Length: 303
Image (cartoon, rainbow, N blue to C red; front, side):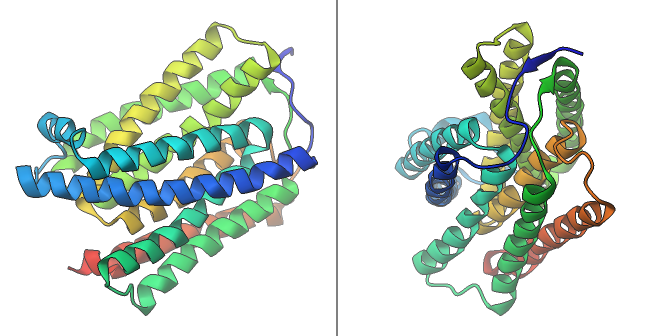
């Protein structure tokens, strides 16, 4: 079978690739600050226009553009996206993508300082549960994972799975949106952003390697659609829950989905021992448990 994209055979970081780690960390800081300001902007718009029972209306979305906090947050998130794209272009996805978990620490500290409301022992424990779970998950992936040439069939498989996910998200939205469930919006956004990161990695490498074709164009459309829908879900998540909870969910679900696609579809963990597979499952369970605990014990959730 011929391949469309030639990429390194193993996760052995060169000095230049290692430089992408601090780039990803700086991006995580911008992600955290952007989330805080966007969340504040959404709350101010809802205070002025009223809260909707079935997600943000078109009027609310348009009003966000005139919110200084929301615009500033959007600019910061734009910087975070650029830094993330740079890092995943030149370094393995399984190494740099999960570093966004640093944003959770920054967000919880910033939120507590800005509001003067301490998180409490249980909420802090939930935050560290998320981070530890993601750290273990990615640590295993870094040891057993490897990058190999991506075939046309593998990319088609990713696009088909994304189409199914988009259909499920759109159908479920009609039934869940009226309950203003923050975890639903966060899970949906995290899954969609996981596909965005994976497809962006492939698209950028195709540009770098000069292998742009019609399938790459389809992947770009998939990135745009998933990113737009994920962004709408994030804004609704800010309306339904705290910025801390939103960042916790995204920094847990996003990398798990991205790395999961790499492992299952792209064969980045082919030949991994069963102990590593079990470790993936346990670590993912720990991280997701942390999100649920934060949703339960966060001061804003309790209020």
